[in-house]
Length: 442
Image 1 (tube, helix red, strand yellow):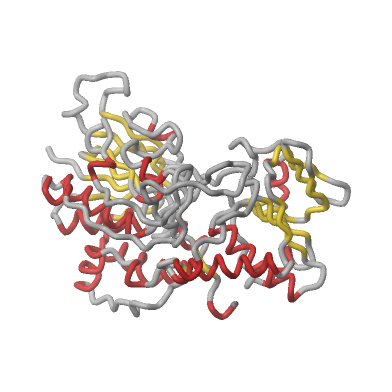
Image 2 (cartoon, helix red, strand yellow; image 1 turned 120 degrees about the vertical axis):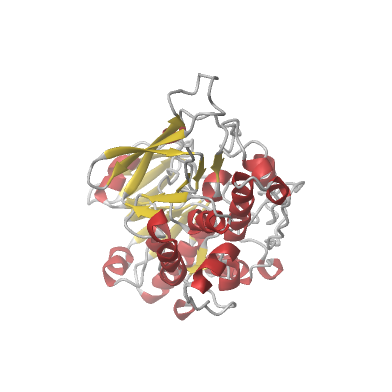
């Protein structure tokens, strides 16, 4: 008996994997917890991607869509997340038809009749994918392979400087004064929660800079709005990126706009701040306290944008070979380690770097990068092309990986954690797929 390949997640990379497998006539089922394709993308639908449409449509997906009469968007245009979902991801899910099943949360994957300790049968028994359906039922699907493209969106990093939630963080999140998503200030009800308030943004990546730019504009427009940017590094250093040298112009422009907001005094910067506690103050405000006793007081809102991490809990019965630091596949980790470099390009990689000791199991997309903050859709599309070829038995195509990603214009790792952020750049790392505000809001 033959079993399908199960793809977990109906986002950009999961749907691209399905399109590749369909093109190779491999039976595939896509399992999505949400009720529509691109659920995570839709949650940041108000921001615009760094990449233009020509870099956001997977080749096999385009061929499938065009056979269904799909009109490709203008190649050089930069879509918002909402446009990416509505104009590409949802039509792609529709073209895949009944292969995509919504309301199906994957809660576990194992080898049939074997836990991770048992050797016998791991190369002959199918995988069992355990599901919880939206109606509460629990079912199992047998699979010949699993491609985990579930991403990391649902597992944001905490503000705590040691990787665990700060004291009082959960309570502050429960009140709504601390959140892990960049605010959509175009919505009146959201704007009202930030206007005239003291807002802290924690994090140094592109998502944090996107929030800073939007909040700095709000500070210009509404008296009493103040913005504090807390970063763990001893200095901002090269956080703003490569500017004009960035081969993704929108990404370079974001860094320059964030720099301008800081230099104009619209954003106060607090460096070397590793949060230990989030404390309530009288009147409902908050105080952030660092591990060395410094404080940021009278805070109304905290926006925590410190990156994301993979949820590996439901993969516990599989034999995965993950890097101890990044939680990425061990052969991929040296290419993307932010402690070493951030040049903005990833060496070509595919199934050879993504395979695990568990036969037929692959992590793809953002989840394959573990805790590394650098990812581009193009990298994920090439990953799943290689994986699909391997699952189809085309070993030569699986190992023929050719991909050049746009460089950031910055060459340096995190270097001295307490210093200027400088470092070396041995093997380049890939750019991140986060976003700019829409042009109308510039």
